Image (tube, rainbow, N blue to C red; front, top):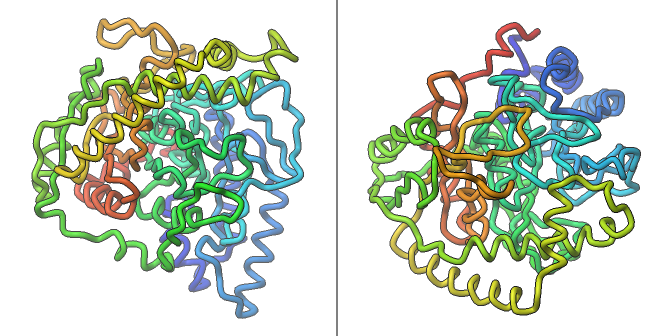
Length: 477
């Protein structure tokens, strides 16, 4: 058997179900990969290898005994350090919670475990997820496997880096302003921001929140789709969870769900969404337009009117931070990082007039976006405005001569899409001349994840950029 870590989740699922390989062997291979490479990458920051080995043995025995395997049977995963895991340290990247051990599993963890996934640990994230660069005072920075001097993105940067380095085959993540898409772009993997309510989140702090979502990340579109079938579906505890159940599909049926004829699919192409974008990003993405055309899509230069989206995002983000971290800021002044502190302070300054204006602007934006997507099925645009940057930077301060005044500014190509409420996926789309990954953002119609993933799947098959492995792996065991 060749390198088990090199195989995607669906391929591994087939091998496991046919008992051509055991869960013990798969888990052992991925543990060995983490032990060999993660000292350099720093992606899986809390490890539960003993529990994983024990669960793998139980999984093998159950399959040998005739039990039907779950869709994620025996697959090694890891959970973002922002989601609670019962009995496993969950720090949220904060020194205040450095020794925190929850007594319950978040819903995404429950669903992955029930489907047979085997957790190897927790993936690194910035403090409370604040920022698209994964660094915190507890564990330090996660480095990009394609260039260890560069950022892995964030806030699901540990997940993306672990996937790129083949330490795990599936990961959960979350996305407020790009936290599934940005690190996927930086690390040459696939990250899907689902529609609000598609993947229910529990526990929650705001039942009406539609800006922050949880979702899947993997190395291929099909693997993301497999995990989406597990994570999605209604939950009685979550008021805004979408009622539509996920497709009933075995791992080997996922590809057939994604196969579609793209002839006549209308795609709006925007090279920049009206934002400053580094020339290296523009150059890497330029061939993607022709690829979509060759797949049969009708591609035209167009973009929805996103005016007001910036104010909406910043207002509701600040409001969310004030709600979640206002008490911590009062009780532990000086002990929260600058990003969390700045966001929370902006939230505490909000007025009723600010919230009212954000509400009106968001409603108008929703109307314009719905009208736009009546003419186009997909919007294609950059995920990020920059290539992976120096891991020692706090955030990007300049894009092609345009100053970025706050740590949020450089993420606008992702967070403006968050405000639309539309599903969006980052799919590998190319590399800079020095080998840094660049992702293409594909945005779909409301609640149309499966149609969107079909387009991403076809693009992935045509380009095969996701098959390029980091130089780090060339000497891996």
